Every structure is written in structure tokens, then in C-alpha cells.
Length: 321
Ligand code: SF4
Image (cartoon, rainbow, N blue to C red):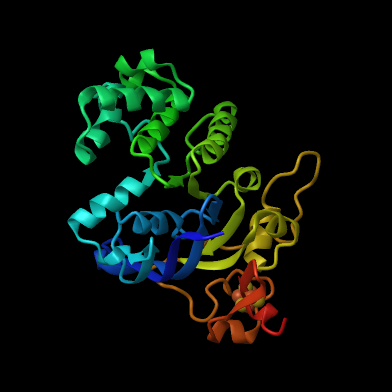
């Protein structure tokens, strides 16, 4: 499968004034991420809150500035894009945000919200634009009569469908979905998860799915990248990661997923908090919480080991495999 987008050695930093005594500190949000996203797949990025996964998505769509690295889309480095190239890029790459309550303008009717990207980015006539808007709202499972309502007249699940319709109006090839179901009631989550799966097939879409919910990943994703303190520590296809996790952090994440009728296993439960991205630990960034940490882990950055063509893990335990 061809790649739709490649991220190479990407670093994203920003300044925070929440340091000791209000001193500005550098937050190392994304630290040398390299990954390929294949056309037509759903690649999930998983990890705890604060691990950098949303910052990575925002950097890919250029809502966050990168410090260094490359983001290659159709053989062009998007980090070098000027205003017009960036505008074109955003026709191909769209984002769906976590909270459908804040991502829609409460003062705009749905029809105007959906028409806006087409008015800004195309020279289509009003009737052509309205035809596209009607098609997209029906594609996400809503009736076109709802287009003349305001966001507050919809449930959370319906609003997320509208947000997805807005992402679709420009016929993008690639959608970044940042925690698309975590703000919704559990009963509604399954509907949106199924919608994403259907849209991927019907519209030939590629998704980068950002989520901390491993059960959503198990159902939806073709491949998973596990992120810890701004680094990808394990990457592979979903089946093999869930059936045979390698990295101690992946094992801990998976053991934290409750299983019906089974007791929690304390074996892989993490102790301690995620270290602050302002003060990254030396050596392996996971060594402060890793049950397998060795002296070398405190001093040296572990290598990325290719277990096979489809699987890699960043850990000294697999160095000689
Ligand atoms: Fe644990 Fe060491 Fe592997 Fe890091 S490199 S995950 S500290 S065993």
C-alpha cells in the first residue's frame, strides 16, 4: 500500500509559563516522531493524556508549528508550504475535533457551517454548493431538512455527525480524528465509530485516529502507534499489538482495559505519574515507570528495533532480536 503521508523525525516544542515561579519553560511535546500513514488505512495513535498525540495531529495539519523534521504529503514537505499551498493542502486533509459542542459555531445554521469551506475554497455556484452540502449531510445519516437548524437543536451524536459532514464537504483524502467519540455518551459512541468505518470504505478515506480508548482502537484501527512522552515506542498492526504487546508501556496500557468477568491483573499496572514534558527523563523516557528498567535504560536512549516488516519497538529488551 502506498503512503499518503510520511512524518520524519518531527519535533514540536512550545513555551509554557506554568513552570516554577511562573518561569517560562520549554514543553517537549513531540520528540523525533517518524511514521508512515498508508492510503486507505485507519492508523491509531494511542497513549495517556499529555503524551503528545493531539499535538502531533495538529502539527500534521499545520495548526501547531514544528521545530524540525518533515511532513511529506504527495512528495512535498508541508512544513515548507506558503499560504496558498497550505490552503490547497487543507482541502485534502481535514480534522474532526473531540468536542462537537465547541467545534460548531452556535450562531450559524448548519447549512451555513457546511457551506463555508466550499465558499472559501471553491468557485462553485450557490446551488452547486447546496447540492454538495445536502449530499454530505445525508452521507453522515442526517436528513437534509435539519440543515436549517442551529447546533443547540441537536444531540451530541448528531453534532459529531455534522462536524464529520463539514470535514467531508471538500472531498478530502485524509481525516485526522482527535478523540472523536470521547465526549459522547457510551450509547452514542458505537454509532459514530460505525459511521467512521463506513465512511472509510464508501469514500476511500484514510484516517489518523487519536484516542486513549483501546477498545475503540481494537474495533476501528488497522495499525496502532503507541506514544509515550512525545515518542512512538511501539508500532504495528492492531491484531499483533493486542495479541502480543512487546513494549512494557504497551503491556501496561492493554492491561488497564477492563475485561468483563475478569479481575484486574496487577502485573502490568503502571505506578507513578507521567513525567512532565518540560523535564524529560534522560535515557529511556519510560524508565521512571518501567518494571523492566535496567541500568542502561537510565543513561542511553533505546534503539528502534524492527521485529519484522510491520512491527517496531523502541526498547533495549529487543535489541538483539
Ligand atoms: Fe523499560 Fe528499558 Fe525498555 Fe525503556 S528501554 S521500556 S526502561 S526495558
